[in-house]
Length: 335
Image 1 (cartoon, rainbow, N blue to C red):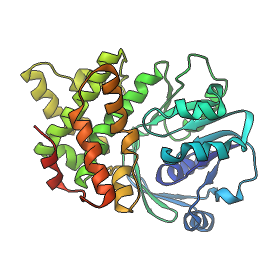
Image 2: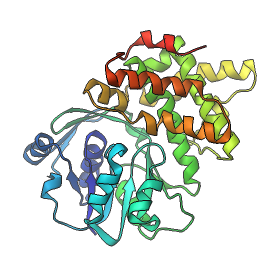
Image 3: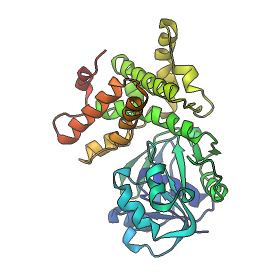
């Protein structure tokens, strides 16, 4: 079995290092030549909540020549039509693309390679690129979990093999209600990643500041309300029922939800949203696939999403240079 991580940036490099360290075989593929050359010369240096160096097999996309049984897809999904069409020629006839992307990317990928060749994976940990060959794990070492599944009810024969690779890093759960698992991740990304990018902060800082925590809480509530109206059951995250903990319908429950938000995110307090990293590097973000997905679903089922709408608007203005990430952006969120 041949496996590859396509778009091995911060998350992919760390995953690849763990898989290789655990005895698995996987190629790390990235378009960034400097990053690939550093990986080839020195191995992957994983710092942060852990610290180790692991020799890995790295190559650029122009060096690809093999056909893979499993391709973990970790690129930004704005270019999915182009990227997935390119990868189709490197995917075995019975191979699968496992998307680690945010939102609900499986639908679009399936249109290109077929529904039976797509799996989705949610990641409950975060990372930051520090430099060529160097990545920082920003979540605690006991939070390295995955949710694996498909939007199709049909079982995929490659699921067990994919799980075996992921288990070399952390526990991978096979989710029957994968749409609910997707929404668990989307809720976290929309609220904490969204505000991390808007404010220029870590998850912990966004949750710690009381003014921004009110916005985080409101974004979470919008996600829960959209799913409730759509008939989607949001799955627990690492054993915690986030709907039970964070939803509210009265002042007492709202106060409890507000109080518990910093505690709920404490394992990921140091995480800085990839959207913020994109803004800092002058790149376009995936906000339309994250908060924008919540807004689109809200319009579909008739649930207003003003806070998610505001995140999309502010981040687009940051992309254009009209605004910069910072606490001044809180004024764009109506209370």
